[in-house]
Length: 281
Image (tube, rainbow, N blue to C red):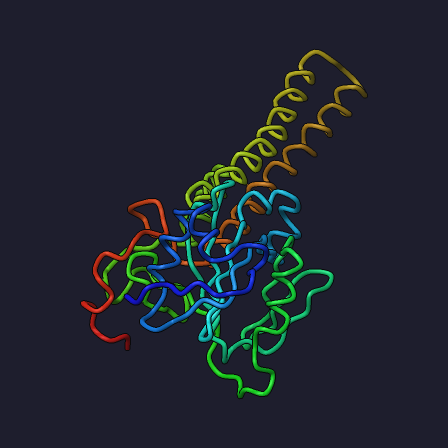
C-alpha cells in the first residue's frame, strides 16, 4: 500500500497528519481502506441521520450514529465510530463519486445519491463546505452506495448473510428484530448500539412496571376505582406490547445500515493483504 500523502490545506480543521496522531484507531482503519494510489481529499465527522432514528429514537440517535467521513477522488467512506477517540465500530459504507448527485449544507448536510439521501448532523463548517463542492455535478450518475465487508473491505450492493470473498458472517436484521420484539433493546445491543439498547430497555421496563403497579393496586380497591385502575393497567399493557412491536421493527430496519460481523468488534483489520484476494466480481 502506498504511503498516505499529507495534503497542504486544512481538512475540517485537521491536517491528515494531525488527524492520524489524534485518532490512531480511526487512522489505522482509514489507511487499510485505501486502495493503491487512492489519495485523501477530505476528513470530517458528523452523526448519520436516518428516518427510522429520527422518528423513533430522536436525540439518542447521536449515541449510535457517530460517523467519520473520508473523501477521496473515487468515493466517500462513511465509517461508524464511537467515543471521543473515534474508535471504529460496526460498519463501513462507501458512496462512489459517480453515485453522488449533489449536496446541500442546510439545515443538515444532505448528500443526494442515486439511491436516496444521506443526511449528516453536526458536520463542522469546513467539512460542510468541502462536502458541498466535493463532487462533479456534470458527471453521468451510475452505481449506488454500498456496504463494505468489515473484514476484507470488498463491496456488497445489499445486505448478505456472509461475505462471498472472505466468508465473514454478518449479523442478520431479522435476528435483531426478533430480539427486540422479545426484549426491547436486546436487538440494538446485538447490532452494537448498546446506549440505544439501554434506553429502549428502560422505556419498556417503565411501561411494564406501571402495568404491574396498576394490577397490584386493582386488588386493593373496589367499585369505580377498580374499573379506573383496571383501565389504566390495560392501557399501559397495550403501550408495553406496542413498545415491543415497535422496538422489533426499528431494530430490524436499523440492521440494514451496514454489514456487522458476528465474530469480533468491527470494523476489523483486513484478514489478508489486499493483493492476496481474488478480484472482486
